[in-house]
Image 1 (cartoon, rainbow, N blue to C red):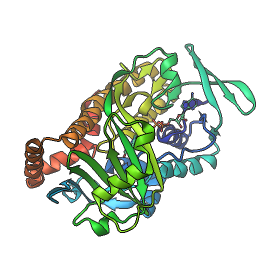
Image 2: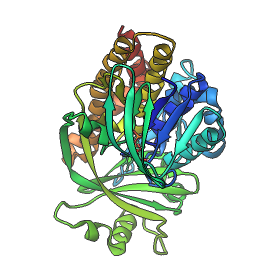
Image 3: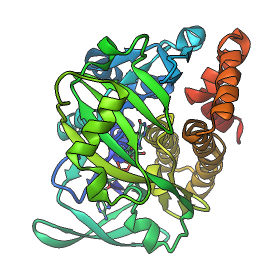
Length: 396
Ligand SMILES: Cc1cc2nc3c(=O)[nH]c(=O)nc-3n(C[C@H](O)[C@H](O)[C@H](O)COP(=O)(O)OP(=O)(O)OC[C@H]3O[C@@H](n4cnc5c(N)ncnc54)[C@H](O)[C@@H]3O)c2cc1C
């Protein structure tokens, strides 16, 4: 057992590689793409994730380039009524009482650069894992890369190969759950919404007439999530004229909106029955998927990587890997189910509600929480993902 294998060079695989090499453990990471993905995906980093990344110097780089968001809001766009949540209330719990808005691709690039210079890291892009096998001493994988097919061997395999995980399929694991009916269109634009919409926060979840949208600020641009009628094709929903109309409805602008990027996606909520399978362990999207509402998917995957690498380090030093990986699964799976998937689903339900009476009730309930410091602190500890980590730590 001379190394750990990692499949997937997304945020979870890269963070696992960084943690393991930090413990002095050699890793080989295989990633089928030629480089870090530029896809527009996660944009929010929660406080505990910043805490976990700080020892590696990543949080400092994120803070230097990202946007600190101490307050976020739920608003009724038509009336301008809003409830604002202030993370200042958890300032006695963390050095990072804010979210940071910063693109997933940039976090990955920071980690990729650190690993490229690391003597214990063997990063192989353009290398796809094809199959996996394990015995009592290790894991063997077949990969296809620039030089053709190859076989690699390691003590354990971290399956961080994302929502369409090959390893999950190879293990024959069900990925139970469902797909949400609506599609989301993500659009980025340099239009300065904050200069035009009174009292907008850098993270704003909004009800509109007959629908909803969210506006999240990123360095130099805003990311708008827009929802469309089901009957439209993917081509129709991405039609520039339709996106323009929708953005003009949100905020009338004298000039047509400049669009940097637009993409349509569907959202699933799914989870595997358990994360540990002998010497192969799943983490991140390979193990669970949730609605992006609340920005917890990537963060939760990074928390998986943090927990799992602690166990791999102990197993590397001679600990019982079966017991350690079982504990990882028992600690992290309930958090994905009870905290991440459930909260994201509640957030989505709240914002997709169209009935004005129910929206009113929901806004009143959220306001009652925001105005009560004790309730609000508890709510923020949960939505900032501290509660899930505390719950996991209680599982032994
Ligand atoms: C539109 C959108 C918005 C989102 N917003 C947020 C947000 O604000 N906050 C948040 O926390 N999360 C958000 N998420 C979720 C977040 O993007 C994912 O949870 C995160 O990417 C999971 O990371 P991962 O490393 O597990 O998987 P991925 O990022 O999917 O990485 C998996 C990697 O494995 C590689 N791979 C796959 N198969 C193989 C193979 N056979 N061999 C080798 N390599 C392979 C892939 O190429 C990929 O690079 C969002 C997701 C979407 C789609």
